[in-house]
Image 1 (spheres, chains in turn brown, yellow):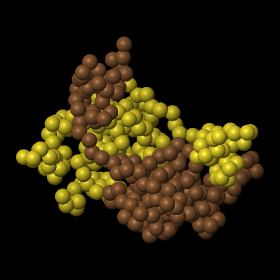
Image 2 (tube, chains in turn yellow, red):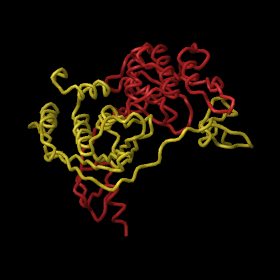
Image 3 (cartoon, chains in turn yellow, blue):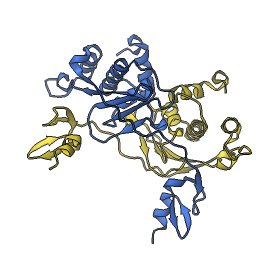
Length: 183
Length: 183
């Protein structure tokens, strides 16, 4: 698939992910639908938060498109193995849940394998209602991330976030050192 | 800080993260040092893998710069609260561990608070040896991510990754439905 013919925001998503694939397109369509439902732009800080119920390619589309990133603390992973995404806008106090429902549209080759190229064409062209379930729901955003002081691990001398340090004989250790120091 | 005067790759990192902050700069410097140590470009698929020992802003620099992203499965989080990052290149079978050591350089105002602006200037200008410990180490890359078939949850009807489904009365449920169905 020629990237140059894709919408510019999808090109950016693919550049971030490193390649184009069906999973990324599922996330792209879901993120676009969430953005449209709540009239969202990109999250500069933690205005938006995405709860994602899988850790597959699709999530990278939310990171690149909505700015709900792992490092900013506004991407929360629930290990459900579901292509389901709930985006909350803290400013509007609104949330939308988007579930991918297009699994049955996966085109199969005679040998049973998925024709990924054809699936991508479908994911690009299908109307929302054919591949997504979109529901506004009561917002329940997670807490905002906080910055914590650091301690120095008494064993390796490296800095460690205070709440992750382990006290041993009255001294703070980082978790890897605490594991190694275990009798 | 005027973004336009920053190196283009840092501008891209800041655009992805949504803003510039000390944590992002820590990640930027660490990711650049890892890339230099192993002569790395951006990971299009899972050629590279980053094990990150925190979930703070710094990680977004690894995602944006090295393509070790949450959705691609080549970003592994260990909850140690440490600014430590280990990048493995599967092709070269080499790994480098980068630890941020510049905590003491944080400039304090008379009231004890950190002058974030001044800290960012330091993080931009300091030589590697003043803020980073960089060590090549034996590679121990995690397994490559795999694609799994989906089942349909017998309760909500949504698709769920086979290995995450819960069997109940001989039928597959997704984890949220299994929790709600618990007697």
